[in-house]
Image 1 (cartoon, helix red, strand yellow):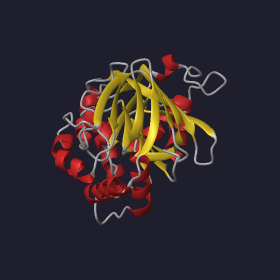
Image 2: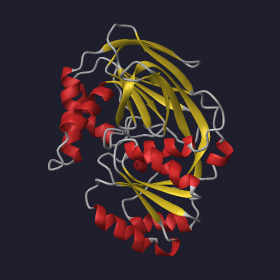
Image 3: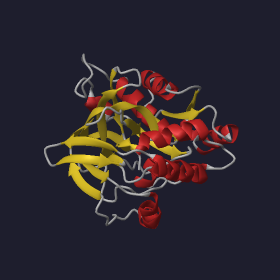
Image 4: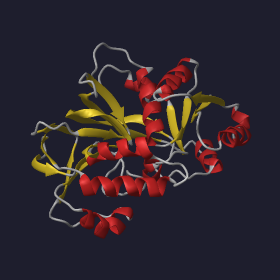
Length: 315
C-alpha cells in the first residue's frame, strides 16, 4: 500500500496535523501533499496517482474532498468529450479514497461515519474496510456562462445554497467558528432570498414552482450538520431529491431540531423524491446559483446523473 495525504496548506494546526500523520502512519511511510490554492487538490490527486499511490486520504472538508475526487477521476480520463463515460471506471475503483474531516464543513464524513481521530482512520485502513459508493455527475454553466461538468460526492443544490456559500466565502471569520458562521449565513439567506420559479424533470417526477432550495443528495448532510436528506444512501444508485418551496425563516427555525436529527420535515412546502437523473432549469430571467459540496460552482440549467458504485471509499 502506498498512501498519500492531501492537506490544505492553510489549515489551522497544520504542523501538528502533519506530525500526527507521520507518527500514526509511520509504518506506511505516508507522502503528504499540501494544497496552496483553490483547485490545487485536484492537481495533487492526479500527481499522486501518476506516482503510484493507491490510497488517497483527503484531509479537509467537503470542498477539499470534492477537489480530490475530481482529481482522481481526471487522472483516469481515457476518452474524448465531457461525458461521464470518458473515464476508466474499472481503474478508478481500484484506488482507495478516504477522508479525514478537517474543514469548516465536514458533512460527507457524517454520512459514512468517519471520526476526527487519526487512530480510528488507521484502524479502518488496517482492517481493509471499504465499500464501492455512488457519485454524482453534473453539467452546468460557469459564472462566465461556459458549459462545465464536474463530479460530486455529497450534495448539489440550486437556490439559496449557492447564495449561502458565497456569503461564507466572503464573510467567514475563523474567530467565530463554523457553527456560528453557517447559522448566520443560512438564516440571513432564508430571510432575504427571493424565491425563483424552476422546472425539474426526471423519469420519476416533474416539479414546477418557486423554490427556496432544490437539493440533489447522495449523502445525508450539508450546511455543517443539517440532515436534509434522511433517506439518502451512497450505495443505492439513486439521489434523494428534497424540494424546499415557500418556507419562512420561522418555518426553518421551528424545524431546525428535526433537521439536525436527520428527520424528514412534515410541511406542505417540503417534498421528497428519488431518482437517478434530473434536469433543472430556471423559468425566470434570474440565474439560479449552484452549491456543490459546499462550494459555489456556477449556474443552472443543470443535468445531474447518479453513477452507481464508482469510488472505493474507506469507511
